[in-house]
Image (cartoon, rainbow, N blue to C red):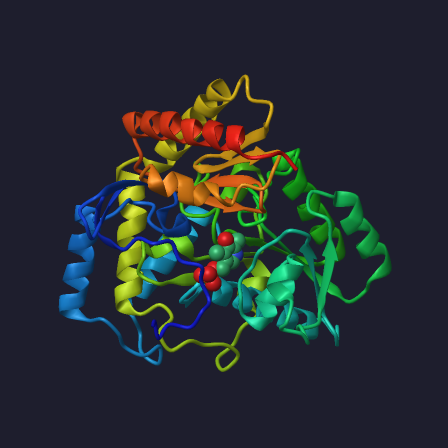
Length: 396
Ligand SMILES: *Cc1c(COP(=O)(O)O)cnc(C)c1O
């Protein structure tokens, strides 16, 4: 019997090594990884330049406390600010911690402006993490059930609904910020109907109200949607942005970035993290960003993501059970007319690693390094699995 706590339904496979978009199990069987450890392994597995950068750093220094200057951390902050237009970075170890930092920053910002009980607008179907505050911000009742009392201070509105936010602005004087995913990942690859217009409208409301616009780019960031960050498909700039997943290519790291007044909110003693931004994690982050740049992986994410979506559109042209195919770069969602969690196992049996979220949405997050022949392999094999599944399962 396993001594691991029962927090995951695990698939019956154990991986031993990887190379590019491929993973190999302990019997030497080869799988196409179309999930990337949930948007983490953007560089694929065992990227030689990443291995070299990490090895060199491990040989020098893995960890020192944040009570000292850390060279790699400063360099990564410089680089992140250069590519994002933000001013300051706080480093932590995960996505929920990055959002915790954003939430604390917003509350502090509120208190500094004389709001005694600051509140943050969050969205239905959102996902922000599993700590108590980020779970409370998350728009999924199933994930929250059993953990009450939840953290207060969140106001929920439907996603992609500017009017609902305006209504809150009229009636609630405690609001100090909006926390939003530019594209909802866990929620089902939900792309606002006017993707650029939505963030722009939220930006305008924030400007008028003196609120912070905080984007959760934990899943959408680091090249995933074809730009460094998903907000860069628009002309707006957020006040706060949270990052994690793809930032360290698997070495745990998160970051909360801020700009303008938001960047001046924290002062010593207000926030911290023992591991956050240590030399190993930030060296991995630096290597990740430079490899994405050198190998033009943002451009590749844009191209390959569209190719996959096109491929599925062609493959499912005569399949009315496929309700919608949507993508933002290499965040790809294929929505069916019925629950399809079972597809994860069926795809595994065909040596493909995929995910199903929001019950009916096949979610693909392949490594940013995926190439045309791997795309062709994925589209043809996965569409066959889906068609077979549809024949054998009853619609809801
Ligand atoms: C995964 C995710 C998180 C949580 O990240 P953890 O590293 O698991 O804490 C937060 N926000 C979004 C949008 C995510 O996709």
